[in-house]
Structures are given as C-alpha cells and as structure tokens.
Image (cartoon, rainbow over all chains, first blue to last red; front, side, top):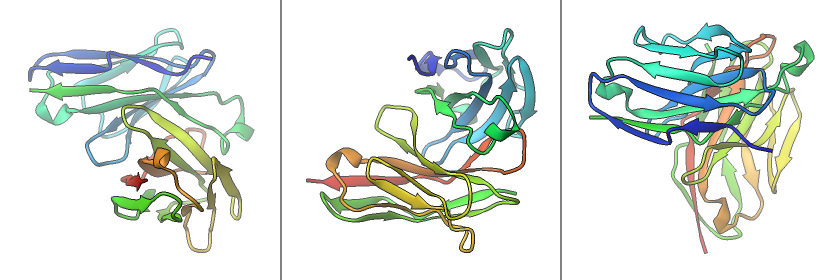
Amino acid sequence: DTGVSQDPRHKITKRGQNVTFRCDPISEHNRLYWYRQTLGQGPEFLTYFQNEAQLEKSRLLSDRFSAERPKGSFSTLEIQRTEQGDSAMYLCASSLVLGRRDFPQETQYFGPGTRLLVL
Amino acid sequence: GNSVTQMEGPVTLSEEAFLTINCTYTATGYPSLFWYVQYPGEGLQLLLKATKADDKGSNKGFEATYRKETTSFHLEKGSVQVSDSAVYFCALKSGGTSYGKLTFGQGTILTVHP
C-alpha cells in the first residue's frame, strides 16, 4: 500500500521564477487537498478537489497560484512569479469519501511535503 | 470561523513521564477532532480521532476525549518514550459540511530524554 507521494521534496528557486509541484494521492482516493505550512505553524488549507473538480479555494491562494487535477488522479500546484513569502512546506493529502455518512470519519493521509525556498 | 489553540511548547520530559498536551477549539456545529504527529523529516500521520462528544480516540498508548462542554481535546499518554519525540498537531474538521478541510493548531514540540 503506497502512501501519498510528492515531487520534488525540495525546491530552491529565485524570486520571480515559476515552480510546479506534483502530488500523487493514494490510489482510488477521490479527494485531494493542498496545505501550506510555514515554520513553527500548523498547516493551512489552500484548496481541495473532489475527483477532478476544484471545489474550494482559500483566500490564501492568490492569483499567482493555480492547482489542477486533470484526470482525478495526480494533482499539480503551480506558483507563478514566486516571492520570498512563498517559502514554506507545501503538503498534499488525500482521502476517500463515498457518501455523507463518511464525512465525520473522513481521514486525510498526508504526503511528505515539498519544501520551497525562494531566494 | 473555526480555530484551534494548543498549549505552547516546547515540552521536554524524561522517559516514562506522563504527557498532557492541551487543545481547545472554536467551531460551529459538531466538528470532528484529530491529533496528527509529525516525526522529524516525515509527513503528518494521523494519531487518533474522535467524531462526536464524549468519544475517546486512542492509539499507541495515546488518548484524547472529545469534551464538548469545555470545547477541548487534550492529548495524554501515561508513559512517554524517546521515540515519541515529535511535533503534535491538534486539528478539527467542521461538522455537517461536504468538504473536509482541516483547521490545525500551531503544533507542540515534544522532546523526550532517556
């Protein structure tokens, strides 16, 4: 049973460059979440997908951020024109929710994260 | 909006000591509550959860009881080990909604010395 995987694990870029991260969820999980975690803080929700549909985006997700999940499997998170304030750990999580009865019990499984440093 | 407040760390204990990490929350409706643990260099792992009032979640010797009257979900372990050294996050998920975004506390660093 493979868990959630993320690529790359580390990324160093210069301010103004574009970066793209990939997340591969647990097979057959229909929900996929992106979170951002800065040093000394808990993760903060960015966006989530139910299959290929992006159903909610946080106000933290500025216009420079875009996420996709084209076939309802893997997802990508792109940051355009990176800023130093974008430096953080980007976490992906997946879960399986089949119906309303699953909502309270839903468990999200997290990947190892991609650590971004913008110079 | 929803929020989670954890006791400030870091917490430093000797092996076999008793552990309590306090967690209180603010939420509408009936949230589900979670404790996640993050070991050095690894991703977040679910430690335990509780989905309704008075439920007790337990795993690996850790326990937490969902207390609606005090809006709390304190994490406890009777005898900690060096291997329990990690960052612990309390989190909630709003009840009665179809999406499942988690709201996390700031995390508590636990260090256990031999």
